[in-house]
Image 1 (cartoon, rainbow, N blue to C red):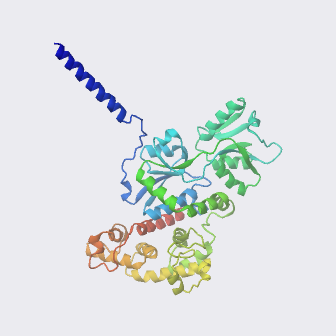
Image 2 (image 1 turned 120 degrees about the horizontal axis):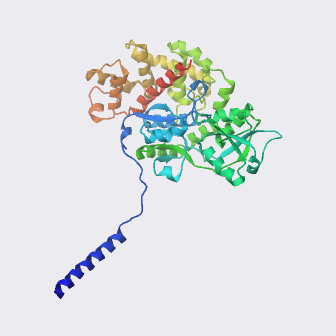
Image 3 (image 1 turned 60 degrees about the vertical axis):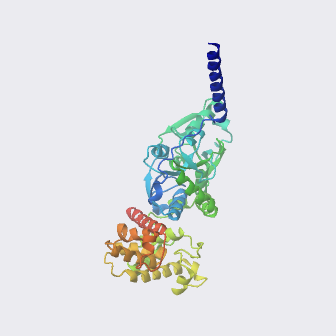
Length: 454
């Protein structure tokens, strides 16, 4: 009996020792759980992007400008070969739309927090921002937060600014009055309300307020009511985060250019305030002059130019393409440009149109003019050689060589696979067609968007 008890207690001791060892070796620290399902979702070329209109981020009336986040998105999309579907979403509903699967990416400066970081992934795409009081210069101007007592400040209900003012109100004595407007009211409307005298004080992010200050110098934006906070694009997919973060790391100059244009120079606000509804760019007269030479709507020529250079006449690509229409030096010289006229807007657009006229000759058998435009756009982006290869593959495989979507586009994408680029009818070898196919879609979408606003 004594031996049995000894064995029993021996087994218990061994079990306790094993459990103790397991407790030491296993890391019991709670880990953040982020939904990163469907990490291969973007092997296709479509990305649903939630955006919200604002003075800097995005303006859904393209005649009045594009926006910092919108242009940044377009640059990344063209690099990655994505086709973008914009989902117009109120900014306070963006994260919920992301969580519900209605969008894949929220391309708007969403404030980050520890709680949110456990639910979604963030890519900081803007400079850190803070909240400020917007007011008019004058004798009734306030200079410290304590002076907000017994003043009425207009703020969007349930916004970050609303929560910050409630905390601040407790700190200064609780006598500040909050005029709450509906959460669908834009920051633009709040600031314009101050400009127009509808209310004396409003709260706005500093970046947007600084942009408006360029247009309305009577605004005072010196009173800060919050610390700087990180904002970023939100998503749930880790692969998507990696692609966006890598592009951001490799292209700081492009990000700085956009920040300068939309924040420091307030270019979108300038267009809103001083330009006519039908104006798209400073070069519209040139587009209207030269587009009839190729029987194009001038908006289509402008859309091509926008996706080439973002209307920057001094742009030079890493490959050496120059000017508004991003002509390669050999092509530019062929159509009459030299090192000086290469960057002249009138001459660059003229030469670009001559090149389009040349490309048109490759596709004179395509009777449908809308279809022919897609082939010309693809050739403008990649050269005609690979497009002609794809047309031969389409015909050989029972598709229509004179239709783009689902036919020639399909085989341009296939030219990245050995089965197709080693085909004896393929004369120009391997080609990654995703950026070119995305380029065609994005130019056409921009054109239709601009035409719908006419």
